[in-house]
Amino acid sequence: MPKKALGKGLEALLPKGNQKEAQALIEIPLDHIDTNPHQPRKDFSAEQLEELAASISDSGVLQPIIVQQQDQRYIIVIGERRVRASRLAGKTTIPAIVKKYSPKNFLRLALIENIQREDLNPIEQAFAFKAYMEQFKVTQEELAAQLNKDRSVIANTVRLLNLPPVVQDQLRLGAISAGHARNLLSLKEPAEQIMLSERIMKESWSVRETEQFFKKARRKRAKKAPSKIKRGDPHLNAVREQMIRYLGTKVTVVPNNRGGQIIINYFDEQDFNRLVDLILK
Image (cartoon, rainbow, N blue to C red; front, side):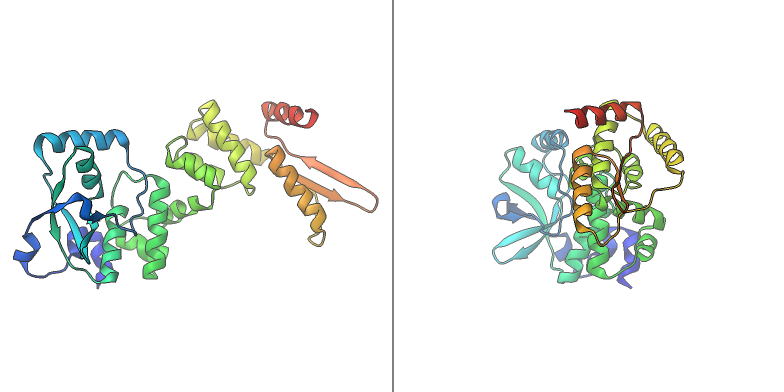
């Protein structure tokens, strides 16, 4: 079955057609080549592209790209980095193998080619996992089996997409690691996740230091939690959300018959001082 081929590498997904045709190389003009719309990889290291471009300038493209023809143009199936680097090197053509895939195999190959790369950043990998599962209707368990990975690896990676976009960008750029990000997922409020990620970067926390911070915070919160706002009071909920966004921490509003309490959480002395400055400003 096609699904089992994923663990065998890309060659297992290629059609078993005419071998002469499969090995036939042609030079394709670079300005006739389009990127793959299903390519989950969005970030390409400028430094690595420069290095590859220098290599291509000296020795040419050593491994042809694989493309599929569409009308008078070609879509990249495998080899977008080589195309980008060749353009950077000033080349006008690139060696390529032209293949024809069904729409399903075309998407499958494009996704799995990226999933199997070791240099994808965690967000790119999360998007690739999610796209593959949605397109081919497989579960996390099935995808894990096909990739010879633990299901927890798939689950923890896809969960990173629940982080706010600004934190995803920090993870994509390498400002924080996947280990940092998984700790941030234990916070329910996006404002808290953003605030903590900025603190992680500012204070250069290791993943271990981040874990210790959260353990300490959980111990402090283990005390009896105050009652929550009634769901039927949209005004109080809206005000609470505004306060959370402004203060960047958890805020609890506890109304009673005549008044109530506003409870503002802080993590440590430094966070307390930050909140005091915000409130007194």
